[in-house]
Length: 420
Ligand SMILES: Cc1cc2nc3c(=O)[nH]c(=O)nc-3n(C[C@H](O)[C@H](O)[C@H](O)COP(=O)(O)OP(=O)(O)OC[C@H]3O[C@@H](n4cnc5c(N)ncnc54)[C@H](O)[C@@H]3O)c2cc1C
Image (tube, rainbow, N blue to C red; front, side, top):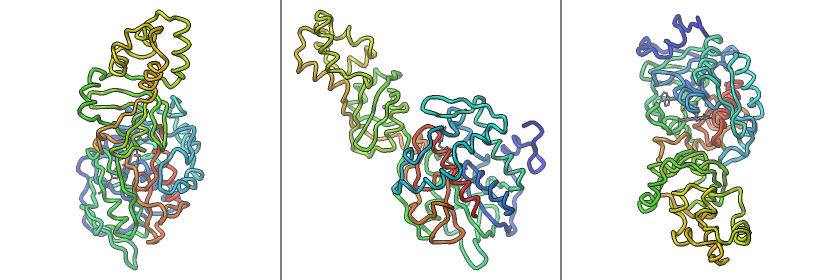
């Protein structure tokens, strides 16, 4: 990494450069990519490998901001178990082509070839051992080697800033005009507006006649109704193994109670499938078939109080919010079958109606996006406007938690990079 230079500057300081040269003249290139992050940078290097003159523009002052903040600073860059089942889309088969052409193994090979050390965590999730910065450096080095030009602090404000004519795309940015044969929209979704998210990709798609699958925050903590919030406030900070489901999906993961509501992987996962007003079903003892177990324990240790029996299984504060105090203090021999059944129901089928979600402010992803039915699954090119491509999160393909969203960014970026 040391000594690497980009446009005469070390990569690290170049990324943080605040005031790049202001360019006013019309600049021509083969491919203009809007968005210098995961999908855009990978696509840029691929297109440039094919001899294209590629320019990437981004309104942020630093490339790849979401990469840097991902995975708690270690970037969960892919998953060993990538398959179409790990993605939500109105068109569930769409992602298969790109995912199979540039797979998790292809990206792992690149990471390993750079000497980036990684580790496998639960559910096949791969993280950098050291820092997410290594993934961004990998992408920037590839771009540099292939002669890609990256212009930061350069915004597209409106879809009407982009026109298509006989000579290709004419793009008016905050720092001058560009003309390109191909335009790749890699501008991401709406989540984390404070790191430069914008709706520009959707607006461009609409301007070229594309439908947008309605967007909503995904992989996001859920908030509680006022009464539940008051009742569950003492649980803040508690994490438990759980299974959380609705009629569309279910996840066996940790659930975390916070001062704002519910979080942890189980909640983040189900949030992508949850609609406002719906209830979720929480099983606080997913490894146990509780009613038969309670009946068995009643035979074995009739004098034991329910509180003592369950104490080893769930935190005391959680038990006290779910089960009536009289039931907790009663010996098992005094609990009829109906009472034990009710208790099992309270712990294994907790029907909770969240008040809402924390919204795009803290969502990791945006569910929905550019409707895939009018994109080529092989190249991500628009069927409405030749030369126009949509890649990464702006497309209606949303991964589960666990590195799937970056893999979609790599795979879709690679696929467009072979064609644009
Ligand atoms: C906190 C957090 C942690 C995450 N952790 C993980 C993880 O560990 N693993 C995982 O797989 N996924 C993770 N994700 C999701 C992942 O970061 C995204 O899915 C991925 O970055 C999408 O890549 P992209 O290139 O499509 O878009 P983005 O990375 O969002 O990049 C879009 C780029 O377009 C630029 N842009 C937007 N509008 C304009 C405009 N008008 N003009 C010019 N430029 C513009 C933006 O500045 C940005 O650089 C995380 C997300 C967040 C928010």
